[in-house]
Structures are given as C-alpha cells and as structure tokens.
Length: 120
Image (cartoon, rainbow, N blue to C red; front, side, top):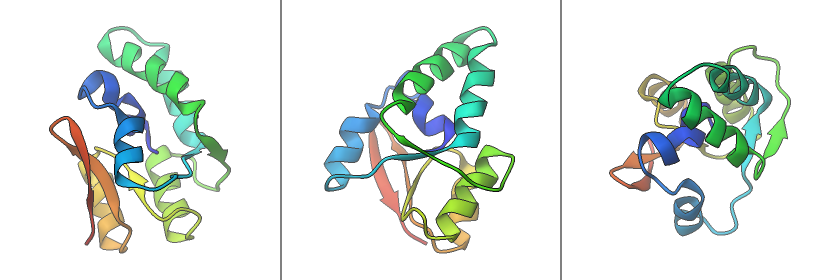
C-alpha cells in the first residue's frame, strides 16, 4: 500500500479494503514505514489532504509495516516490490505506477469507485 492508496477512501471514494478483498484471496496487506511517515506528515497539514492522510494513517493500522532502505515512500514501494517482498503494489500515483510496471510489478489502482489490477 502506498500513501495515496490509503488516502483513496477520501480522495476517490473507493472502499480500498473491500475492493482488495474482492480482487485478492486473503491479501496480506503491507505498508512501507516511509509511507507511514509521509501520512503522519501530511496529516499535520490543513485541508482535505490532511483529512485524507489522517484517515489513511488510521487505515494503515490494518497493514503490517515493512522496513526498507529507501527514504522516500515511492522509492520504498519500488524497492520492496523489486526485492519481491511484495507481489503487487496498490497505488493511484501515475508516475509510481509507471515505474512499477516498467519493472514487471503488477499494480492495483482505482478505476472509478473500484480497484483493478494492471500488469505490464
């Protein structure tokens, strides 16, 4: 799970966990520690983004945190996926999606109010 995936319930009106359960059988939900840090930082700001980040931080409690070497959240998602510590990445961030697809990592993203899996 990346930062904006956890913010999708507010920003895109997507029931992320319900959708993941629909797409995957018993998914193991993981979140890089850099994503948790980014959510904490965004939640401390103002406006709708802060609300979405606060909700995302609460939702992240349903996920297992993962340690990594990268400082930035997107880089941590790529590191964890290319090291095969996760099989898919859930994101609605187009540049991150493109980076992941270029390395052969399938991506789960929003299409309307649902999630779909994109491969290569």
